[in-house]
Amino acid sequence: MSQKETKVGTRAQLIIALISALIPVVITLTLRIFEKDTKEISIYYTEPKQILANTSALEDHVDLYYDSIKTENISSLQLIFINSGNKFLAKEDFADGPIEIVIKTVSNSDESRLPSVLDVVKIDDAKQRNSKLNITSRDNLGIIEYMPSLMNPDDRVFMEVYVPTSEELFVT
Image: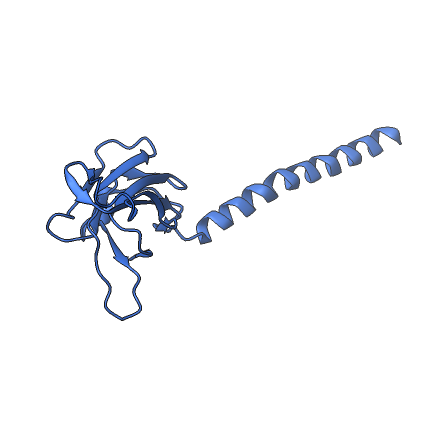
């Protein structure tokens, strides 16, 4: 009697063990089949921080220059690019051109000005090689173009942007 109970007990344990091993595999494969592959990049920016200001007390005595460009104020803001999808992004995914960032001043009227961009510095580029950063501020005020080379899911690229204004800014 004990031999039969052992055989039945072992079969039941074997069946339970097989089902326990197969259920997670089946669930994982099912979720993987129905999961959508998304390629998505999110762009965030911080509020501008004033770095230098030419106050009225110093106005007649001090000229403020940034890389030989005369300016009254210098503010900085940070741009953050995040691959928020679940697939990698490569240059081929940007067939219509690089990411274009336009920095504008906030004004009371519907018309807003584009301030020139003094400089853009990559703080952390997610260990990318061959990414391209263009500042077309000399010709088209306030426009930055960025072409990532490769961004894996959750990769983040941080850039510091310097502008010659103390006005409130927004990014499109």
